[in-house]
Image (cartoon, rainbow, N blue to C red; front, side, top):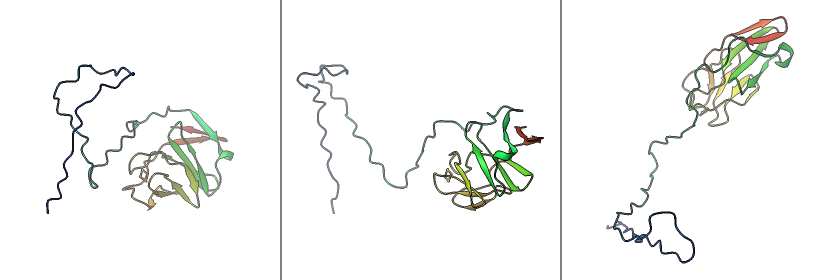
Length: 155
Ligand code: FES
């Protein structure tokens, strides 16, 4: 079977009437107009999340929330600080990184006892951030928090 398909290279016909193309004119050069390589499945996805794993960007001592902001048996995501605070039981607060250990998305919600990543469906238990579901390879990192009175702070 000769399933090879010939790609016809259109010789850089930049001679568009009217609009001036920004590239060097006089497109007579025989620069091998490399056609875009076809990406086959299985190629490394290389999904650039843009943000390089923000390591410890959360300033210490910053007041995050009031204890009353965190529902018992639930939690809250602080996107800006990239922290999730949960309250598995009344008066017991836990802090975790909000950065999913799978591909680095920021988790978005806490519901039904789990912290949820929107990207590929990973879910982490609110008590210890253990992986309950999804492709995440490991628990969310612990993020130290301090509760003073009714104020929750980082660090
Ligand atoms: S990045 Fe969170 S599940 Fe993939």
